[in-house]
Image (cartoon, rainbow, N blue to C red; front, top):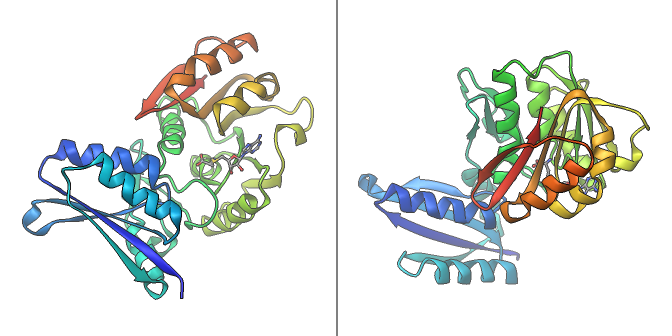
Length: 286
Ligand code: SAH
């Protein structure tokens, strides 16, 4: 039977240390983790589950190496526990004061004034746990607050993955298109669109920037891909942003942000707003 590796990292006291561990996890446990308070509120226990294969063993070794002073327990559990374990560790995440990202089994959760985004944590990237995704949603939240994103607008979500960014824009009333070169991602995104009831507001297609109709323009373009493809596609991406429209790029290491900015400057754009989270940066233009 398939086994899972469970890695528990215990952080006793020190909110700052817990935040550092959280930042470390957000780069390495992209699928998420569980956080539970220790008895007597003495700190936090972070729990990660991964299929028991070499990458999981490497993850556990890296944890021990990077956090030599923290108690780290590694155990193997049967796959039977997987359903429960999976559900336990996917916790709601609040982003930008506007969104709350939830798994489907928490659809009834009271999000207050925040807009819910339901994401089935499957194969596609984009559960909201990764800083690159959160940075894009934050940029939307800020633009929405400032009245620069309005429901009549159309968006392009380039590299839609789980569909999370497009769903976030649909939640603000927009309509648009999500594309991804990975058919599996588009399949997952379709599920998530239905889950959020936005399947008529957002269209999906397998493909990249090259599959878009020449001259088609979008009021909001978001692309959370990686620095190299974003640089290579700069002129094409810019050609699909409507005059006065908004462009948000993410998936960029902070060390790469200047090179990406230069490519978009060369494509005719002014200086972007740079947002940073850990080692990641997003660039946005309005
Ligand atoms: N938008 C989601 C997912 C980002 S992951 C989020 O913000 O969380 C990046 C996605 O882009 C992956 O699903 C990958 O398949 C897709 N991708 C990579 N290169 C691409 C390209 N050139 N054109 C379109 N999609 C691309």
